Image (cartoon, rainbow, N blue to C red; front, side, top):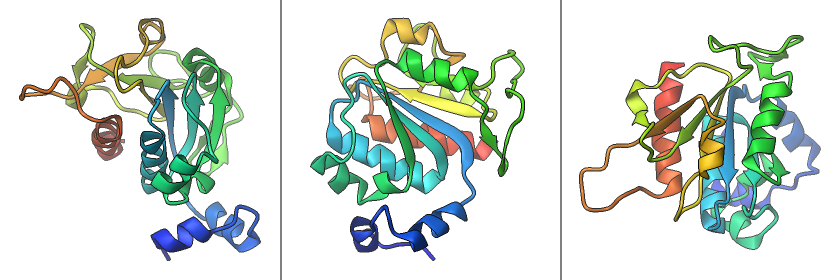
Length: 196
């Protein structure tokens, strides 16, 4: 049974029934990395998106605010309590953590590091406008997968883009240069889910 917005807001992290309920959710081997996402409402919205997709974990990096910030709590409608998250000083640290960790896949911990075709333990895809970017519909989505999104004004840092496996962008046909970070993450992550 799904929880309403009110139930999510009122849920207590120490509630044993909730903990048991969360254990029954089949998590997808997908991770979000947020680099310097300043708007706390965007952070909260990304928690809500992460819950909708039942992803494994969110990395909050750099100057990204962390829960229990009141605006994150409000925008996430309490889903920040349902998704595993961790703060890292830089996105590089989060990427290194993912590339060196044993990852949860298909209901069990891998005893060996998971390898993708490019010999990396995880595929890291940045959602960013770049000369190196390809249309998000042309990317190679495979799990385990991490989607990296950046700051609302200047995007993903250039030095971080050097660390990723692919850079994808969403076509923009109007006068506006980009979409909101939550919208961009939702478009790409739901598309990726359909390909995995």
